[in-house]
Image 1 (tube, rainbow, N blue to C red):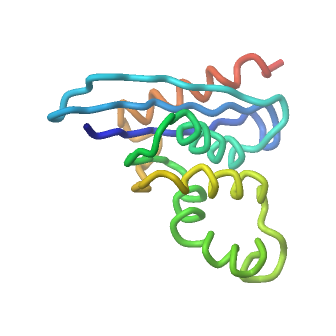
Image 2: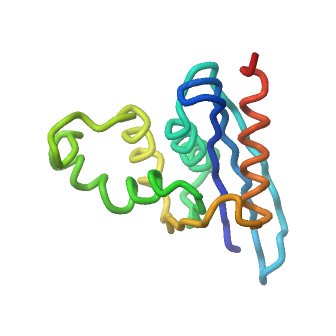
Amino acid sequence: MELIAYTDGACSGNPGPGGWGVLMLAREDGAVVKKRKLCGGEAMTTNNRMELMAAISALEALTRDTALTIITDSVYLKNGITEWMAGWKRKGWRTAGGPPVKNVDLWQRLDVAQLRHKVDWRWIKGHAGHAENEEADRLAREGMAPYKP
């Protein structure tokens, strides 16, 4: 069984009301055998925080150690987790230039959430006609809806 989570964040204003969405698919022999949708939001946040919350929520929704692929349209999330985080941790959660890492609370939560899983992080171009990514975006906007004036 293959597990894939498409994640996305959205914000109306930056900062402003925001939402995150996750489309989780379980595939067997290439066919989708199970689908799960998650979403949520906050009244005052940023797009980057919502991108992080989508990935965190996907990982925290899993009840046992799992191998999964997380597909995001956020370069910030993908590069942060695969390229930058190890250096941030070595430097006490500071960037190469010295200032504290932005959104450190969520980066640390994501770090803990991924520990028990085997995660393959992938980037996909957003708003490029990928149906699953578009569904994650729709879920993020749904999560944001209760917080929009």
